[in-house]
Image 1 (cartoon, rainbow, N blue to C red):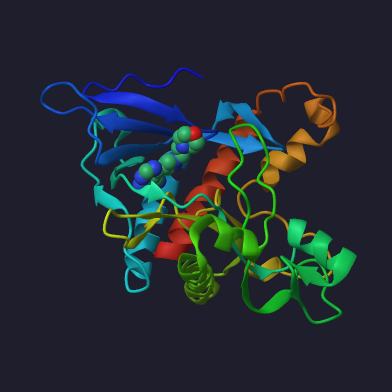
Image 2: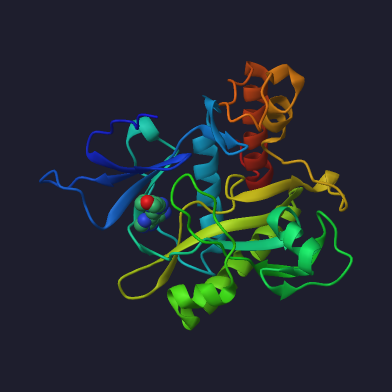
Length: 295
Ligand code: Q0N
């Protein structure tokens, strides 16, 4: 993956689906106070970044994130400085404040599934917290819980960590704020999304700090890439819930039609046009359902 050449910006980092650039100052030096955060159209599934892109995915997720930042602004300030970005990345990039990032993935869960469900089945706890008995895959939790994970180096998986680990990383006062904010963001997200037919099972958010110590919400927020979105209409605790956005991709990749075995270590094949188009339509549908605006 060769990053875009953006005049006036220096490429600094590429993740699976996002690219970071530093704006250059008048002397051609990278600014230390800002970053350009670019959401690509890349999509990942089963731990692979696919060769096929989903047209407009980066723009949909960036615009959705901006919409959420507005609706969370009374809880926490966000890092966006400007949406005036180069034409080549119009609508899918934002200029952000460069922060000192908290060295922890802040995860909250409102519904039980995935890694949280596995821990619950083994011990009746999630992230060390005791939960009521009788919960099943997809059960709604009494209230969102904080289930932090480590920030793994690129290519590795985030590992669950304990609340005490977060305290050791950032101190007790900051840990309490991160936990509280993460849970409140997910609770607010669900209050809003539920009215629009979407459940947000869990979410991962990132925070950073200004030089004066103010905590700031960074990265993308409450998008289908950072969260599990489920269609409310099909929610049925007791079975795995279909993914709002990636279900066509997963279903095709695991079907005989793809000829791919997810355990093979091989790269997955390119997606058929129909799967790309249906997936694109799901991202746009989620944006339009949530915001009530045409994409
Ligand atoms: C940021 N990453 C991960 C080295 C590169 N507002 C911000 N300020 C500072 N940094 C970031 C943001 C945001 N958003 C940093 N992503 C976003 C880049 N790291 C990952 C590990 O390797």
